[in-house]
Image (tube, rainbow, N blue to C red; front, side, top):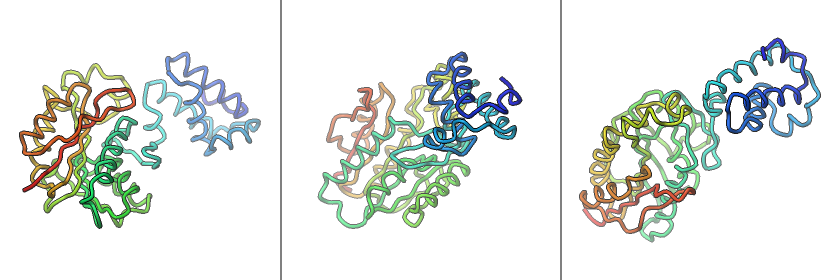
Length: 295
């Protein structure tokens, strides 16, 4: 269906028409996606779509809807099309240099919060570093929960840093968040109570086997973990061990079969691994926690 054919349809009919088109194209959640795309094109939320269901689509709106539809049919993720994604209840802007934050990564936030709240040494100001911050998702989620914390995010990409700074500003926590362009933790100094990271961990040859929404849209720099998937951990773990304050924790996301090796890397760097890996909602060991017992 072209934009010309969409113009003049009611909002309800346009939504149903788009949902049918997405379903025919093999999109997994056509009804939801159609509602989100038309809502974005018309600047209407779920209630607004219901209230204005009978009104007609005007040509300029039809053009936007058709543009969105073509991108979704090409398996561009909804979050990419809309330019933002919810993570830990926070609305985060995205850019081409940032991953789309995923629910699995909220497991890192959960593990970090549990580490802080169960450790009596964390009183007063807490210093957090987020290595490879991307959109700032993990750091900003933690700062939204830990009001006594300040944080620094690093990323090799200037565009990612700008995106994270924008998100911090929009969320009203820019005064507690700073961002540094550097490779992993190379630009950090001093000691941190908490270091978190969702580094690239996909094996290089496995990237082509990923779902098209990830493979063709997420930045490969943020996906490619080298031939065995562990290149980033080989850099981050020793760096973090030198930056952690006594009692501080390193919390990292890992791939489905990587928790044992990353735990061993932490131990080799002088960290203890006090708890088993934390599983995500799918039961996959998703997060490894290491702790600095002394310097």
